[in-house]
Image (cartoon, rainbow, N blue to C red):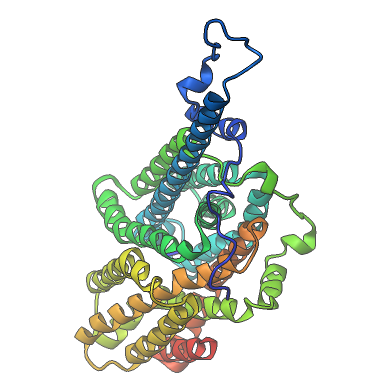
Length: 457
């Protein structure tokens, strides 16, 4: 609940712009993986009777072709492994968050009965993630994706352990803050994808990322509820910690570096550059991306408001309980995962990213209006399918537009800024939804969200 294209093409990352440009560099970045062929490890001896200083031109030409073919295969293998690990990481990250979703209010109630405390705990994670995410993205541009992604995973594991061991509100807040500070792995994951894919393929690959995100969110709450029922309120946090630690160890052995040294740049760590608000303002002023970031902000505010407010809305309007609301959230997750994993991949082959993003925003506008005024409870199910389909189209295509509009050296910064915008909406959205619900009525968060998205579209 806490923790997603102006040029049609860009400079493609193709065989001539390999992630790892030379075999020695590749071996150094992937030392733990041992991607060195046996033939390369052996000292080649000249044929008997031939002067070692004079080679056979035909043999040398063949050796060169074989070496080039091997380097291309190694590069493709590294890209495949990086993409697989990134998708697994996002899935486990969202699974861990989802596992905590059903238990956080109950854990907080052991120390404080205030609903505001629950909200503040959620905002502490989102707030620190908002500040830290662009910093992690900028550092990944300088030091590489691999160390920053592994650090982020380790930080989440530590935060989960602290949450499970917490004996006070202060320790609960410290746990969520630590997880928030190191919680920028989605932006680094997106930068990894940008490193190893061509601009034309990024929308569908970001769609896979969104599917992993959605699948983790679908399974997490159900697992968290079952584990807490069987072993107590601390058990889900320890399970999430075990998953994060295991993924960190796995990454140490299989995750290659996707951002080679020759493409890195020194990170600007001035106060101005580290100010996330300043980064968002600069992104809004971007010649081609201002309207894109406005759309990202609008639809995420509306959707985070729905996530935080829908259970209360369904209770007041239709007397729903937690089971009915959970079923609808699961439906939203399933539709979103299918949309981003399968449907978007087909749509991007036929339509431009900008057209798809605009279509997704229009669908969301319509679905929020219907939600606000729907007269029967059963109608919420088809309306929610429409909402999830719109979000599933909009999320990867807007991210792909941002990625394709900037240079390779700016991927981490701009995608980090994208995640900062999303994190900001997780602070603004629930607050806006609660205030409008209390002041203007149960349907207000939805019709006002529709207006917001319509303006951005």
